[in-house]
Image 1 (cartoon, rainbow, N blue to C red):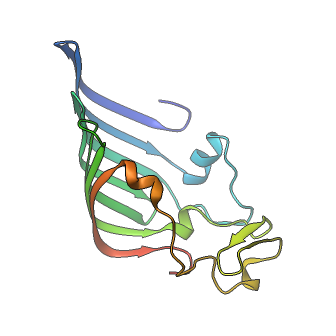
Image 2: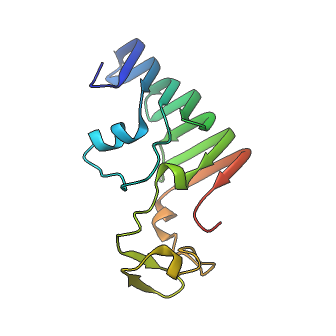
Image 3: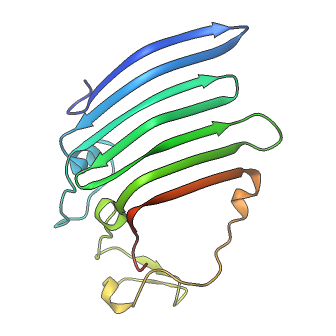
Length: 168
């Protein structure tokens, strides 16, 4: 137990041919998303609602250059997702493959904007001190530079009942 977070893991770790091997079943929970965020040193906007308790379960394995998370189940209050994720660092480019299903997430509830903070408006290409209502949306349909991903290969599938992000 770490503070209000409870973590329970069972499994084994081995060193075979100088390569670490790991097989772990993990269950973690915390009674309050806001308290968890604040325990990391991050702030939470005053007046924003706590999304609720956190619950995480997964089977994690690692062998050679491959780390996998299977049977992943994450819930934060009424927000949730399930899935499998694999990171492979072998070859010229690392790759990530993921199948996230049963997704029902509203990112605005998990990462609310503090209306007193400055924010960058893609539409107006500038910083604003005023409230978000002064700008129709913080999102833009202008092209985004994804060049940082050139170093990665990926195959990610997301499906579910809802995936909400500011302005989308």
